[in-house]
Length: 132
Image 1 (cartoon, rainbow, N blue to C red):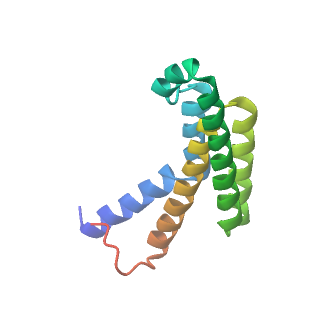
Image 2 (image 1 turned 90 degrees about the vertical axis):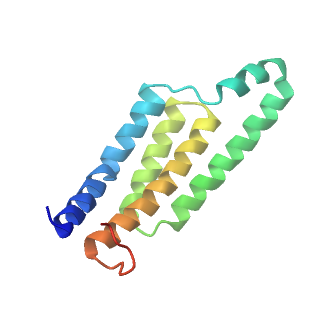
């Protein structure tokens, strides 16, 4: 296999892996269908400290909202903004946990950055980046 073939295969794999539907379906499987438990240790502690639990929940809610708004305001592509908005709204309705909302807002930002990287690799517009 040539270096060029390896590089093309790597970029193709990244493109498929970070295709929005595939990426967010995996997140849904983990955070909605799988109902992964976040912050297990903290939750045990919070049962004994209700005021700290409320304060942390409020902070996480503000962080999640701030992150989501920042992602939705900074993403240039309308289609991606729509996908992020839909996925975040779906999560809000199905998983009432600000810790999970915060993680998913971060995952949207991570997806966007990887999406931009993959796009640049496909267009070969990154002269510095060497995938092999």
